[in-house]
Image 1 (cartoon, rainbow, N blue to C red):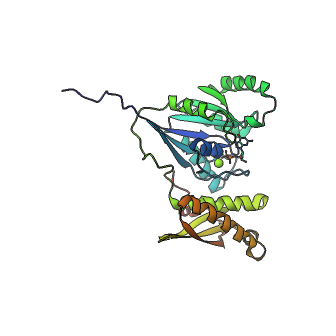
Image 2 (cartoon, rainbow, N blue to C red):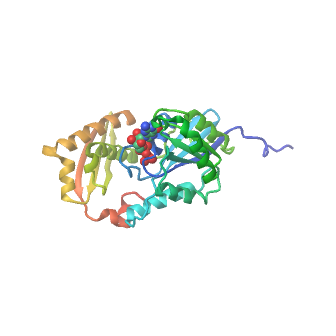
Image 3 (cartoon, protein in one colour):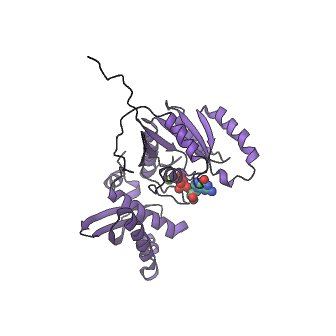
Length: 304
Ligand code: GDP
Ligand code: MG
């Protein structure tokens, strides 16, 4: 009798965490590696509150990406504690870490991420992002070498997440480091996030885009209704803010702003869910929620 236990599986499957301080381009990188929009990006830091899992299956290889919220220094609010916890959790139990930095910029927040990574056992690939914005490319090489020595990483690679520079090379560095294993998700699945979660993320993104600097930092989106009836998907979302003033800003003159947010969100949802969408948005003031662990949990910020 022969046993097949030692026979190679022939398939690779593993977890990759993309880590880095806010705004270095983690969500952009994830989206471009996946070739599809999963994570929400914006110019303002702290847009990503939840680790979003994106899945890429190509032939024998399945990569499961974990997009981490940024680490937040010197912050005591419950929401920041949660975000820090989520970020450190995501770095454990992965097979490869991509540490993303923004060109030559290195600050306390990068330092904090590096400190977290010093405890990580798996291989780390340092990706220096936004090289499309580096005019003097000559200075890159010595910079990359210096970082590599300082951080004891496996590989250093310059990339542009936004302009798709060197992303294939980055991906092959990841694949080389994945363990053998059976695929954990079906080939066509691109996220394990629920449709409700995705719907909330879309609303949040549109609010961020609309408000820019006026964005109330304490804002959450809760999906109250998600109902498919025939060809129509009805989604009702509750937007929670902390103060009356924030509610007024969000609604805008004669409701103009919330209407815009709703229209833009609906278009994205129609593409994502491949259905006609009826979207209802409500704005509610719920003071103190961002500083209350229990309220956060009830809003779903506990799922890692
Ligand atoms: P995250 O907070 O780390 O997830 O960062 P995001 O992915 O949200 O990106 C923050 C900002 O940097 C966005 O405005 C992106 O368009 C921009 N960005 C990301 N990658 C690149 C890049 O390779 N080149 C340039 N020029 N901008 C980038
Ligand atoms: Mg992000």
